View 1 (cartoon, rainbow, N blue to C red):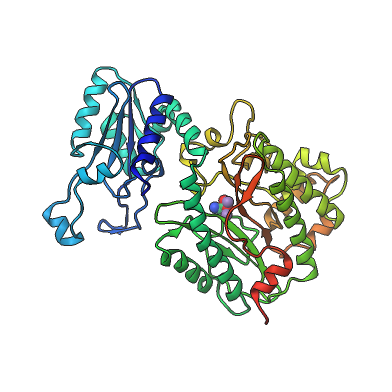
View 2 (tube, helix red, strand yellow):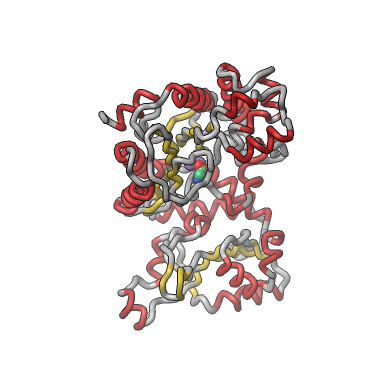
Length: 463
Ligand code: GLY
Ligand code: MN
Ligand code: MN
């Protein structure tokens, strides 16, 4: 946990951004896997962590804006708990570590909120994403889960997005700590990838690296020879010479700060000429997009720039044709890159996505596009110093999408379908790094993970 002033300062800032009422921030509880006491690994709620710092189950933080008071609700462990789980510091002493002096048993929360509701006071809560907290909110506030998202406090969402979007220096240090683990995860995968190895053999070692560093993965590992499937979490394939292997993986520190990198490598250790051609286009798009990052620039314009580099590169290979700018404006490149260029990253790998992508990534000035492909861009708005975000262009040959578009004769003026057909079975290439927006530009975070064709091949070693 950070020093207590980090949490007291954040709560003070939050108070200045809100008018009145009560802020309710429930933490998470354990979630059963296959029976009640056999639970998934515990992950605290990121908003609770940000303002109240405590990484344990069964807590809720309350900020009373009208009385300028803060309380953590929770229970001290019972003798039974001590026998099974060991002794724990008291709630009072844990709360003091994050600068909160008032604590109450969890059962009191309902009383406090009922009283506030009976007086017609506003209770600010966030859209819940776990059923346990949906049921808790229904219990506490009498609001059905189906409408909780609509009744969540926009004022609180906007205030939190404003604060969490700009990373504090100690948060950046924490993200950089995770970068060392990320480097080891990705370079280990490069060393292990070779014909005959199963995806799950590498996936297990990579996840083990994150756990050995006293953390965990920041999201389920994407490691697949079918890199064209964007979020493929199955790891059943045997690696074969001639294929590509895409790994999109991130580490999370014990403080829950994330990394998110993608590298694509040739199973045999050496790229074929066709693979190199496509790889160089993705790399160029990624490097040019990163170079364009600076405060005041919209990320949507950087997404469009990357899309143009991709369309231009594909045109040079005869895969696309026609005017590159109009192809991108109309969305023809989305056959090859149907996703956005990147997203915010921090306590969540897709930072604050629970608060609503549009609240995090868009504003009055920059609205989400409804064009297939560009519509999936999670971050479009103007960049500010202190944002941490990913830049992750890719080129994919997705058989189902290709067949649909070809049948429809979609964008025939921009796509050379006969040529694309030759690439079906190629897979996909994505290259992803994590970037801090600085005063005058950007900084790529972490020790550089091999990225050029030569560096990836060198990291994979002699074969
Ligand atoms: N979590 C996958 C990605 O956004 O890169
Ligand atoms: Mn990723
Ligand atoms: Mn990402």
